Image 1 (cartoon, rainbow, N blue to C red):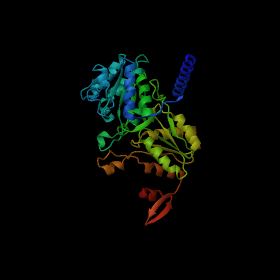
Image 2: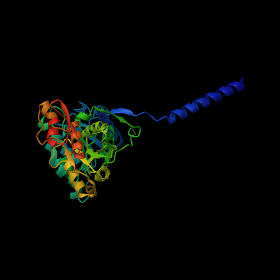
Image 3: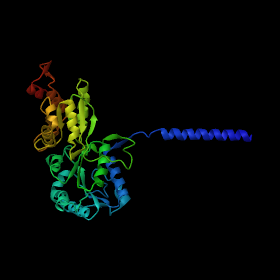
Image 4: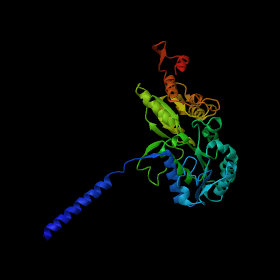
Length: 382
């Protein structure tokens, strides 16, 4: 009996060891995480990691944030680290910049970046220029974050994209995440950076879930600032975008692939410093370029990309002029139908791709489907 018990015990141990090995070898499944929760997790982990980090802004504490991005942080970290401010962007942005100069690492939330205009003197003159003006003696490690660009039904004063505004200014780093991995990894990098970082989120992306890999779930995971990501490989044309428009580019690319057009989609992730090397390498491969952004066309992100391509080695590889898809050059209308016509749609991207590649579009005319190269006819048909 003793021998039997010993045999059974050893058998149980062998099975248990086998199960442990099996469990250890099985990688955890990817999680579905919204952009809102990815931002919340990033701030939570950085607040826990570094006592110098704190969050301030309008309604970020007791109300959990206007868009619930800071949900639960006030209850966990208290009044000293999650601070509700009065409605005075110039005031609390100045407090944040001063605290950064004194050695803290503030996260300054604007309820929308449209309101950052009230504090632009603090962002540009106080934060962006101090490191240079002090000959490198005084760093300003601060993150300015909040929703940027067009939302829905909020009209002209709440719908601007500030990527080009802040991307214009030396001394700032400007990032613009698209999915949950971007949001989580880039925000952690921004908080740890010793330079002022403008972190441009998008209100319409907050509730969108994306798969978050096992690697991206790690507390040590970061996305390097200044490095773009190729979201889809292709060899016919390069689409370069940032923020919500990356999703539009991927949707357009999926439709165009059914017609035999393979688009390479680049997610900029960072506006400044811009990863022009990744864009150049793609253009050299595809020989065609379309930029897509929600902001206005004049002096925009797409205009900068086109200029950099023209000035660099990739220009000689272009088989057609680069094309920009942008928001319409007007203040955002309030009416829904006018708003839809003021921001890029998937069909606009597809039209620009086919125009660049000189692919005829199908045009319905008096009940007949015609193949047409005419820009005017195609524009009307769209």
